[in-house]
Image (cartoon, rainbow, N blue to C red; front, side, top):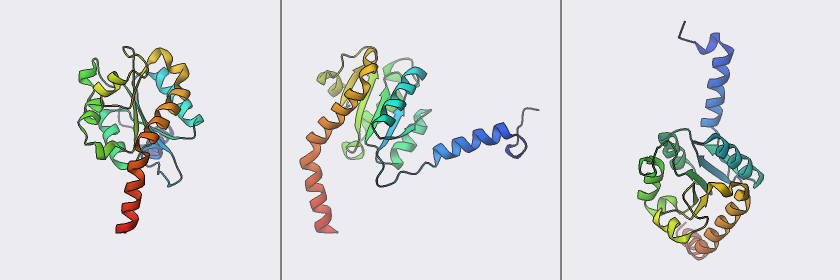
Length: 174
């Protein structure tokens, strides 16, 4: 029988429960949320472990629509995107294209890092060309912890004054 009712099959029930837990994983005010959009399983595992070691609450996107839904529902501090996430070429990467086309105000809260084989790590013109904060060559994933820390610190330094003015304005209006 191809149909597998959840209430009759423990395996299906467990899979659905795990999907629901991942889908409804709430982000608290003290959490540091991070979102990963990778197709390469080894890179995904490395990224998850690294971000967890840095104290991030990690969510993963399985598809482009999953990424867009998750990104719209939480203020992620860090976003890691594989250059070929769900794609054969960078031009087919719907997630990357969506981030590039997104107004800055909708993505300013996140340090976006793009990982791929063709990049020179932390090349500013490559990052600018791809509308991300930093690019990382996949051969340097063993340094991911330090690279994420640097990208986040650089982004926080760059946006510090903006965020201070924004908080001041919110207090004045609120």
